[in-house]
Image (cartoon, one colour):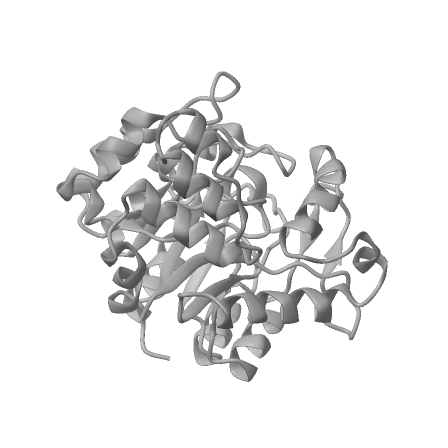
Length: 323
């Protein structure tokens, strides 16, 4: 089974989904690009965004060379005492929405999002496990989630017992407000890995060139110590300037390639222009990708052109808990 492990769901709350979208900072300027990236008009922001966006992503998956996509809920930031950090997030997608979409469409695999400081965190985790969740998604630096905090031990132990995978953003974040920049390093996953949780370091700790610290070497070193640590190649075929040719060559070496999973990061616009400029894909493959309207398929083709083997697309299927 070929799976995209990193596809965002976005909504504005139409249809009583509970979603909201309140772009802040750079996100305000990125909204039109986000919509164009999935083939929606700008008017969708004020229309039935929930339904239009989900239907568009579903069509993209069905019309791609992939079999399924992990769709991501989005938690709000919380303080360590469990209280929400007000006015600090750009969008919110409740767990119920992604669980419902996954029940309705077998092409969707649900990744819930739960801040472990929430007073009801364990109860919500049990509810989501019963609902079929296969993954928990978080942005530690944006949601203020320090997984090394001993207070979250029981939560992580339950994740390990259930086989629920932890997908955590690592490295640069330039599209949403960052609350705790020190939590961008893959080291934020150390305690989870020691407890036995299978973890995916989204973006492999890569940082935007010049602007942000790069933790790729930290990720590489941690894969040697922790057999349950994986990385995904999401957003690496985009104009985010995350990936350097040397890092790509290292990702494709057999030892590290065995730890890389395929992810697109849709709706982040997929473009191989930077990959071609840095010599990571050839001119023919890049130009061919520009003629593919489907962003999920375009990303997959660019990843193949970059040299990622077929196992990158199928590896996740063997790691997922039974639903």
